[in-house]
Length: 510
Image (tube, rainbow, N blue to C red; front, side):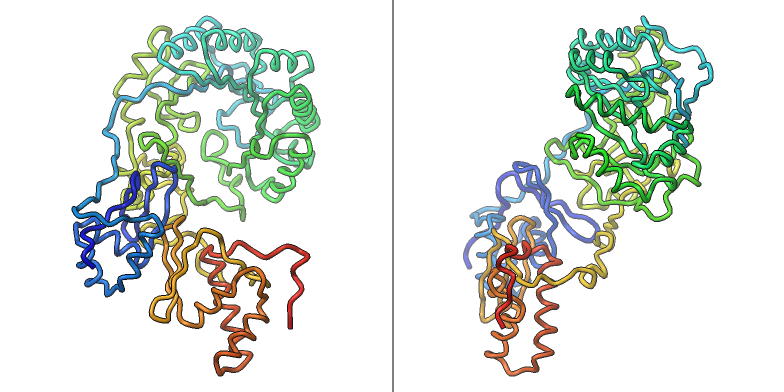
């Protein structure tokens, strides 16, 4: 081949895991899963093997590597050009976000309350001046995002003074987390004028279910009225739906209900109850609603792939914790004038600096530099700061995402299969090869599968494809039909199809 060496395109880097590898595209902010021959080529390239050596070791035809080049994954260079992922060195984190838990009092008594709030007279809480001191000191440390929460933050009479003070100190994002039961039109009008955001918890679209969770009859009506008023006055509002056994069957209906109230669908969040405060009650855990998920990825800034760096919560008594869900990880007590000392202190900085290179299992995962990891969930669930989050369902040792097995059997077969745009298809020595530049994956096809692929154009239905194959090969119609359906289903499972054509083009030629 005499093409020297291979090099990944600019701002692309290969990260290897225990089983698979991932391609990090820092320029586009995306991450791709690479498997099979593509992964083997990139592994050998990263180890300094030449193009000829790679082709010889893997038994590749020249067209194969050329196809990778056409897909804008690699280029051929005269010298070794693989570079390691530029993982930032540990550095002192700056304060970016604060939760201020201004009171532990609440007019509701939610089953899962993470703060354990109720209507009882609280212990001595920070004064107005103390809270203003924390707000001022946070701003001096560079913090520009703040949330006022509780308990029920609106029960604190000086809340509105504190909000205005935060705006005056230069905070750009100011949010109140509330159950919305105490809001009135005058107060909401003020929120709109001041320019603040509001977050509201709603547990079900069924009044009786919501009220059982809050422990207060009639709370549903008051909360919904509060949401309507916020939407009417165009106050930016987001809704938090906490899933527990009591409401797990209502999630979809609640999301639809909230959207009908006028809330932006992108501002409706769903989270399974967390083991914090009263949320530790195992009877609250959903029976069937999934508690594990695929992690979120974020690779714009590799130094900020974990959730809690740069964040603190201050409880109503002044305890400083790294996350509102990690209540026993107290790193200091705010006494006025000492916030900088706490933020820059070794306890908090150590917690902020934990990376997935130190976490069990995660350290062997190819996604470890892009995973939006939650140490609070891992810690509160297992008691181990360095345990893998139980919410993550990916196993780097077998390299499979959850529910991959059996997925093909569950998915239907599109009547008019249509190949996705952007895929590169080549026929090499009678066989077919599909390369997906978006995912970095390559798929080898038999002669029959290659023919089926060429007919996946959105115009040919399954019967057309079967007929075409029967005209070219001697075979039983039933067997051909079965093979066509299985092949198309596999194309679909691999994400190579974009779906069926429009409704008016669905009639099938016989």
